[in-house]
Image (spheres, helix red, strand yellow):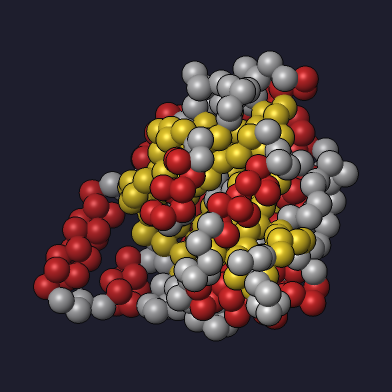
Length: 353
């Protein structure tokens, strides 16, 4: 039984869209698989001279039908604790990984193909089947990344959630109680949130300072500006400035209406600050929550993998919702394990799903 694995082409987009929505049981018009979004994810340049090509592979059977797909999000791990040149190790995150159930082994074949692209691979979340395959393929399970949320418009959230069954009503009551018991603490740091239509040289300095405290993925102006060009929801960019006018960090936000309930989740797609101070993180979380509420979000959502981010979110009224498994394939042990990992929804496809 032969199959042809090759890079994605423009002519494949419509067929790939149908394959992904069918295979993942998603609506035919789901944003993540829309042809224009697939073009942005896999064919549009990210503006980085070091970005690998291609960023997507399709597997076809003898008839030419798509029977498998795997996409990659190229990046690099950075940290002052990384001994590689420049404290940088190329890495990738796999997305839209799907094989036809009638074609056993196609998913593994695709994974082996992309393992050749970067020396380190990682994954956040994913399906149980995908995580099982990853662990059998040399991925190490590390401490999870936590998803935190804060209600911004509790009355609307409760109304749109619907009472439904007694169990659902009890869950809504518990969530409302958490909201009112976890009120934001007064902020102690002074920051101003300033809209940014594009990002520039300030990104490198902030990322370098952040990498002194944690392991994070590379941030460049090109990477952030690429997300501002997302073809569906209009993501918004911001920088944080202190009273002296110094830029202390940057952020990306996105609004995601949930198809079933119409609850609007406001995602903190990215938030990077130049210091590991929980007070600073608390202030940033408060400012971003207010901005998301102004934009119309019912719930704010952020990720945390560092103790200072967790503490800052907690002080800002956020509560833990659920963990995301974090798997790392690093056969040469290039990435230190004694530093916390700082992840945000900018990884994989979490910024828009």
